[in-house]
Image 1 (cartoon, rainbow, N blue to C red):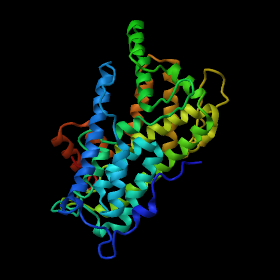
Image 2: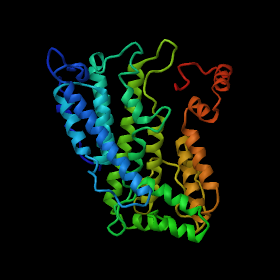
Image 3: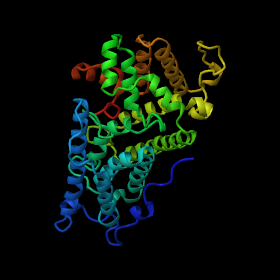
Length: 377
């Protein structure tokens, strides 16, 4: 069963007034602009505090005595602004940044749903209003969540959502799991010990944490994550329809592949970690590896692989097998990279693989990829 709502949707989706259902644009309203900058400053202060904490941890230093990130304040200010003054997608994007930190996958689920319903209900009056570039400005902060030319604002906090809740080993995350996988590639015992002393978690410890994580935690987290993925898919579709294309034919909707890939990677890791207690319940669909094979062997049930996504999940399970049985082999990393590329739309894949813009544009022209298909930036 999924977590309860983390937002008061009735309050947040209620019209501001009969005359102006979407309210006013906070940034441009002389009386309300202080409220806008208060939200903006609270968000920037919280992000700055996080960066300082991350830098201290990376340097192996104890955390400074500075104030911790106050995402509860960001949550309070953004929800009040959306409910009382303005249906503003910039404010809503900053609310999502607070929700992911305060409520994990359930927060993402509700944040994506809120933006979708705001867009469906108030699009003709939504703030910020479109400018000469169309709706690109309106959704600019949503674009920032995914990232375009740089890492999106949501990607690190998604990786920091707990995947375990062990009474003995604590909460471990996707970021911890990636570090553990990298640790497996360290052959030098001294360097390996040094990294563990610096706080890097081993795969062995990860397995122990998963083993004594309550089944209720896994079940609820999987449900929240599945609903977050579904809501993000709906939001992406709605924004694509609402934003349209610019004069050149390029989509003005925010890019979405980074968030989609981050959520999918979390889903795969969570399914793998919880399989010992949830079994097939942990799988998003058919196509899982056979569980009754002889120890050390690996088989794929071809009859239960009707979709390409099922095939991708099976490849990731094969990668997990090689990571555990041959930790120094590059096979697991190659498979995971192949799946990541396989999930990307062709234009985005070509943009990542071909750095020369002129060559890339020529290939798009020759292969018939139109400007509405090719990713911007």
